[in-house]
Amino acid sequence: MNSTDRPVALAMQDARFETAEGLKLLDELTVTFGTGSLTAIVGHNGSGKSTALKMLAGLNKPSNGKITLNGEDISEFSAREFAKNVAYLAQDPGDGADYTVEELVTLGRYPWHGPFGRLGGEDRQAIERAISLTGLKPIRQRAVRTLSGGERQRAWIAVTLAQQAPCLLLDEPISALDLAHQYEVLLLLEKLSKQDGLCIIAVLHDINLAARFADYIVALKGGRLVTTATPNALMQPAMLRDIFGLDMLVHPHPTTGHPVALANL
Image (cartoon, rainbow, N blue to C red; front, side, top):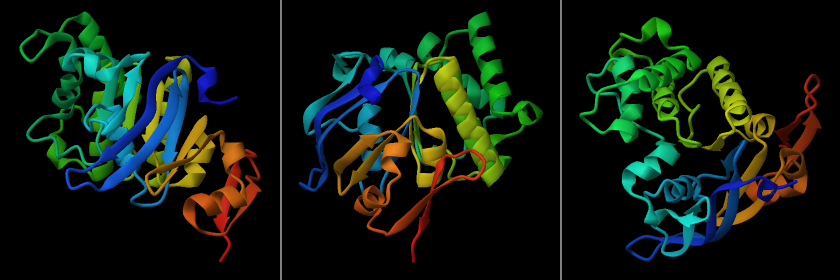
């Protein structure tokens, strides 16, 4: 099975991105991302992971090719309509200014009622669910700028959940978290992809976490697509060497059976 076996939510078709100076960061990417699945984007630093995610979020306009949402070019959507369908969390979303956690999460409802609209019952339910799912209830009245890096990251993830978009794009969502919270967040994303039928795309640095939680892995190298595959298909020594340029050993986890890669140094 591959990602095209599921209904397509987001897709890149022959997408290329060049800077104004002519530097080619991504070249001829064709990838589909289905609903009800968690897809990890992996690759070495500079491989184009964040650039690709920004293209899917409509922040980087393709130099060639197109990005589609349910078959329609995303350039045809208004900003608010697109935000109702796609939520994006940047690698460094900021310190939260002077907002409390609850106030920050409330911003996720902006696409549904605008900057001056009053919150209704559905908005409150979405906010409460996002706060609960991310474990932020005990600190909901804290100022975001006073939080630890991990707490702040969970608050920003809650913003995307409150947005109630069917597609979530997350750029290194666990980079500021300790190991326990990394697993909590990835378990949550795994659950939401299945329970709510979301299309979740996350840039991850740890190939073993990607293999443990993702349904599909998109591997990039030098701005080009190496492969789109299931974890079991990708976690092979020859494939990992092609992606990361490093000899690796792959063994099944003794408890879960998921493939685990170790550098063969």
